[in-house]
Length: 94
Image 1: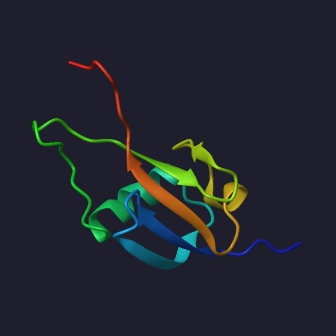
Image 2 (image 1 turned 45 degrees about the vertical axis):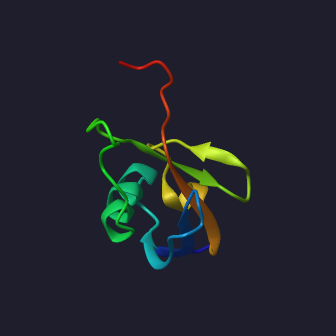
């Protein structure tokens, strides 16, 4: 079987207000690398209201699970998958 070099996906923020179609995600990229490229493209905030740095997770709608930053796109995503980006919440963090 020939592996595709890129994977097309749809990505939204948790509210569904910001949606982008990405047609050329490299299959050898990690989910962490994908997130780093998506955040500025989607104009997602890098800091919360208190100025603390935000980290984001990607949830794969098809499986209903959060993806790990070290997972490889070609091993994890299928064409036309939908990801939802959401900030990581650390309750009680100082």
